[in-house]
Image (tube, rainbow, N blue to C red; front, side):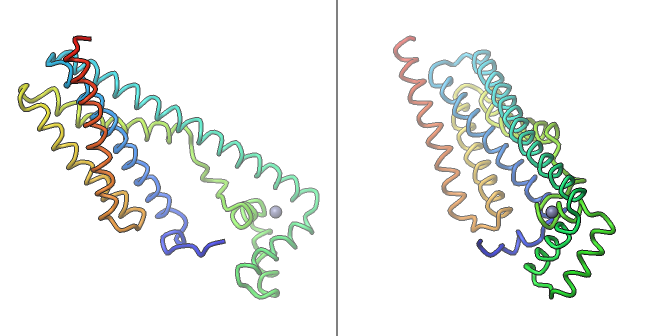
Length: 236
Ligand SMILES: [Zn+2]
């Protein structure tokens, strides 16, 4: 096992809020990159504003719903396995409470308590709420705060949508000759922002993250624009 970092050591409300925030930033980042690639590609082929709007909106909805569905499935699966672990723990507690008390004592000793203090703590924790104590110490989960799959799905839907709106508006609002410069510039600035934020929230140095994120977005727009322009020129 590796040593926990400073940020990981503070479990609980602050840690989970940071995780949510980071997930939101990454979701918005996905929305920006995929929608920017889409609308810039279509703009390479056509000047038609209604086509750009239709393509951008379809991309926004398809992306946000696919993100939400993926999040729903993954959080539901995680929740199912956490519930199964809790059910097993509940059964063990009712069938062999003595062994479970010994187990909790050992786990607390592993965390640095002396045998005597660990025993006393295990007895008290078991009297108060045995299942919660085992869930926290043994499984590392809080039975009262399992992640809600609908909340997670809704959050990624919103995050992706907020990100996707930027390139969508940037491509349809300005006059034709300004579309690409406005979209490319605003997307790259936004990606610098999301790269910086996600690095800071993950306690990483932001410089490289910003560079990678901006380069990834520029590459996506460059590739789709080239393909769109080729198809447009070929009259497809
Ligand atoms: Zn146990």
